[in-house]
Length: 197
Image (cartoon, rainbow, N blue to C red):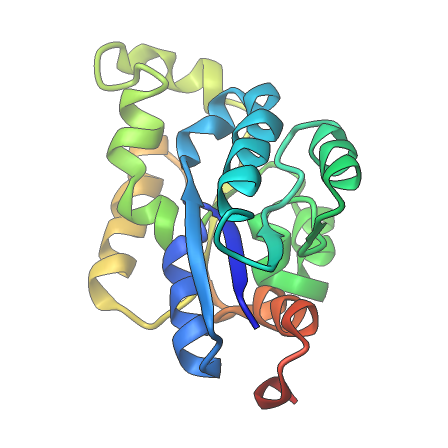
């Protein structure tokens, strides 16, 4: 079976690791994670990648949350006849059933993942202009009360960077290790692979 997995760049490392773990015969296509800053552009970018992947692969699946598209991603996928891993965003995918409790207990939570911890300088500080105008921090993050790092793997360096990122935002840090969480179980269902049982 020829399978293409079209994934958000923020999930690509994890999707590649899951492909290896479950021995899936699949090619992974990444879509730029920076599109989260312009979610209205996500559906077109994913559609373009779907159409390119169809030239080589019999089956195409999308590993992406809605990520602020307001349902436009799912509308496009329905038109293209392509299924995606369910979920509003990667934070909910990783935390699974725990996500609702995390947000209900403290709605002002800023979430980090392994990817976001590694890319914090670029995706948060530079893209929001905080490296040039640090006084904007309170404008952006003044209503947040904590940072929760949803760790995919045990890594001392990433924990140090998460601590640094939280300090940059002036917020306390909590670390919760969920591994691949719901991302793995949902992707396994999508792949219907016997090694996922």
